[in-house]
Image 1 (tube, helix red, strand yellow):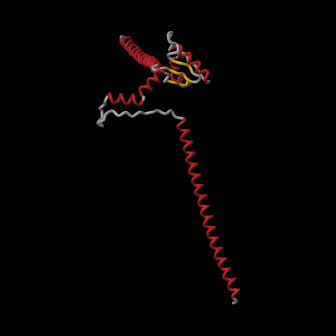
Image 2 (cartoon, rainbow, N blue to C red):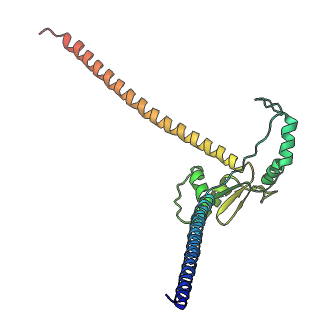
Image 3 (cartoon, helix red, strand yellow):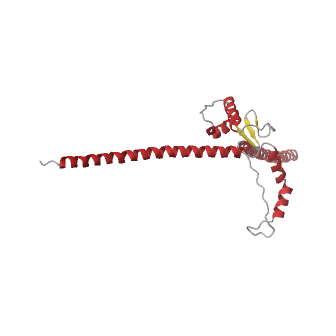
Length: 230
């Protein structure tokens, strides 16, 4: 083989080996990019799932009425049924519980929808009223409140207020209505019991009277027909 031809062959081999190395590098780079794309897709999928679950959680929270619980440390000795009055009072003051209670009592802590209020306290009315729309519920509640809890002449705005969809009550007003409802239900239960017991006693008296009449009739027949000699 001539020297020129051998040099051309060696240069071709070097070119081919260099091309193979470049191809392998390109494949590795492409593979890394594919892995990055897959990982980014996975991250996006997890983020989407987290976002969906968070939205569902917020929807559930918005449909509830949250209540806040304050934990009070009763004593420093970790013993049951041992309350330090001063320690508990200081915690209530520092946590703002007493201030929150005072603000709630000064405002309208009880806020009830007209429909819910009417369904619970319509027993106070003498006549049965059917309500279907929000305006009818509001009118029925206003009539009920004005009849059973008239406003004070000195403080007409002090006891309760009418909102667009809710009735706002001062502290203690709802408990007063509950007492009236309990009294009305107790009186109604006594009336029902009285009627049922009256019916039972009347039926019992009629049975006794009919039995006594039959006994008297039989005895009178015996006396009357026993005097004859057949």
